[in-house]
Image: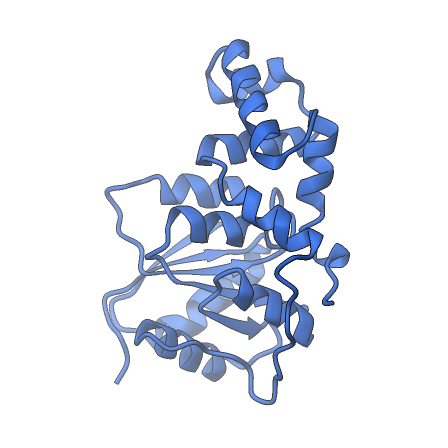
Length: 221
């Protein structure tokens, strides 16, 4: 038995992968509607379409605008009822352990077969946690620097998170204000709130804190 009538977002920056995955999975799930996002910002815009109820996000950890686990952490903080399956080319136990630690409902290696993708999605839709066979999760120190940053990041509002991402892109307050359609004073207010929540003094320190969640930076203690 497989779940039907699902609304699933494939969040990955490679169009060929999204297309191949959608086509392959379409036969496995009846009447499923597939949505796509090629960046963290595009995913946020999809989720802000409140008229559309989503059932699952298939999330690549390394999309543009996404610093490692940051988007996963943000999703779990602001959309706690929406399950997220992480899909990644990184298949090591440390990456998988972090993904589950930050709220992932499952982890599918990009090298997995389509049958595996179908099994994983089915399991998660029925409330289970899905992991690749043979994976032994490693313990994560809740007091390490990365985990502390993750906890602080989860406190940011969606707009504050978006501004932080734009800080990481090197955009000036004036540019951010124009892109978001708000005043420069509003961006400064967001910046002040971001610095306070992250426990930093300026945008450089805020970006460094965000970059700590990049997968290449993360270590398991």
